[in-house]
Structures are given as C-alpha cells and as structure tokens.
Image 1 (cartoon, rainbow, N blue to C red):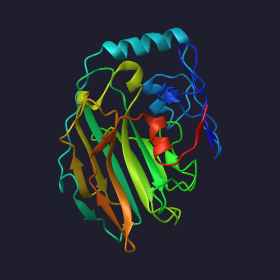
Image 2 (spheres, rainbow, N blue to C red):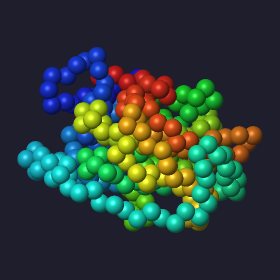
Image 3 (cartoon, one colour):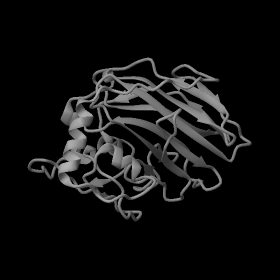
Image 4 (cartoon, one colour):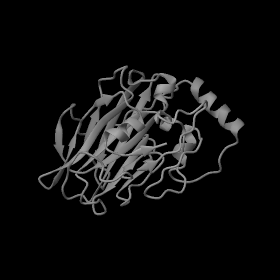
Length: 260
C-alpha cells in the first residue's frame, strides 16, 4: 500500500483521495512511499530533473493565478512519419533495447494542466507492485527501466523505456494523460486538442505515432496508448479511450493501493 499525503484548501475528507490531483512534487521516495508537496505545475515538472527550493507562499499564489488567466500557448505538432488510427496495433522493432514515448497536446482552457503517467502491468492487467507506475511524483520505476522526463521543443514530455532493465514480470505499459485538478476546477478533455503519442527508437527515428481525434466532456484521463508483449515481441496499441477518473482513480483501476 502506498500512503499518499493529501493536501487541500479546506477540511480534508479522510474517506476521499480525490486530492491526489493537488499540486505536488517528488521528495525522497522509497518503494512504499509517495509524499506530496504544494508546488505549482511548472515547478512540479522541473523537480523531475532537479529539486529547487520551495517557493514562498505568496510567490506561488501569484504564479498559479497568472497561469490560470494566461492565454494557452499552442505548440506546433511534429511531423508524424508513421501515423496509425485508433485501435490499430503495430509491431515495434525487436532489435531495439530502448524506446522513447513522446507526448504532446494543446489546450483550449488555460487551467488545463496535463500530466503524463505510465502504469507497468503484469499478465493480470494490474501493476506488479504498488510502486510500479511513474508520474510527476515518482519519475522512475523501481527497476529504473522507465523514466519520465521533460521534453524539448518538439514534445512536452517523454518516457524512456530500457528493455534491458525492465522487470520480466511487466507485460504491458499503459501511457495515460490526466488533467491536473480536473474535479476541483471542472475541467475535461473537451478542453484539450492535438493530443498525441509517438514512439521513437534508440536512434530517435519514429516507429509509430497516434494523434487523438476524439475528445469528450465526461473524460478527465485518457489512456492514449500502450506497449505490450505478444509472442515474445513488443507491439504498440493506439488506445485513445478515456475515463472519468483522476490519478487516484487510475491507481485503483490498475491495482495500486492508495491510502490518505
């Protein structure tokens, strides 16, 4: 069971874990612990590569208020070399010992702060252990095979996968986009556009890409794609299906035990 400290602006309901979607960053983590800190989205992502000092409360309040009123900055989409349609399954190069999953999107609402996460599942369709998922609060899997990183100009975020380090019990990795604080701010995927995933080989060449075309107002998390093992080889599945669950709800869906 992973204890997740909750932080809310009002009284905390101990029977609810919806506040996992509050802003947080990574502190010292062990396999059984994920802690939460109050940081704005930009600092949360920066903390994946470094651990800057916590901003003063007043500066943080100003930063978040400004972000909520700013006009969404649109990014140009990369050129997709090998696009596929929703539901299409594509073999991945068996000769590659590593792959990179790259993610991008644009928003129609300045408050939509999208997070990337990945769940490492066994043959049962559940995580092989409570700590076997990566997200902004835990940027590396326990075996260090999957790492969440801030991307460059072409993509917003990426996850690298090292198959030489990957636990042999992992049979599938599901990539998810989640809107931060969606319940509290009444946000949904109808406010998102241009969401995509593209898989690159070790040389940076595109193996496959999938751009979503369906967006719904009753969805706050989107399983955009997955890679899975089939007959000893790895394949990509363009999923593009969403749920009305936040990160805590996804943890429950994939078998991660979460406590307040």
